[in-house]
Length: 163
Image 1 (cartoon, rainbow, N blue to C red):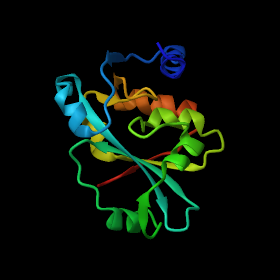
Image 2 (spheres, rainbow, N blue to C red; image 1 turned 30 degrees about the vertical axis):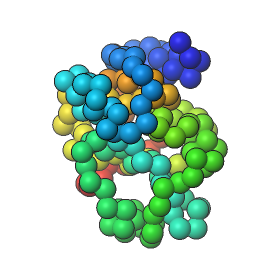
Image 3 (cartoon, helix red, strand yellow; image 1 turned 90 degrees about the horizontal axis):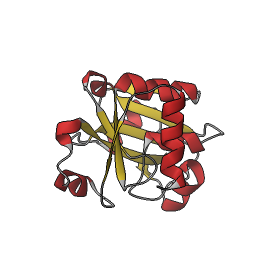
């Protein structure tokens, strides 16, 4: 097992958070995830790492894999103007992640709290959420409440939005 994934599992265990892990082949898109047949375990999450036009603000958005995200209206909602996907270099710099592995767990690596985290409030009604443990070779399923507990422990402000 990789050191990255183990860091996530160790942090979850330390907090007494119940979770289930499904190991799988590397996936790079939501279509790849769908081919694995995991949805019966919970709601698969799509994670978008975005930046504002000036590159001063960075955002991690977590939502249902099927959610349609309009970057223009999202930028207005967040008071950030025009949004675009952040580069792979920024993803590595701020969250210590590679493309295809974007995850709220990446906020473990954001020690300066430079990334603003937003989650679609509809996910709070889901039984279980599926997110990558810093790598796209596994999916961790845990409750919304437990994800919130994990992030609270990192001193991350979890801001709920309606997409």
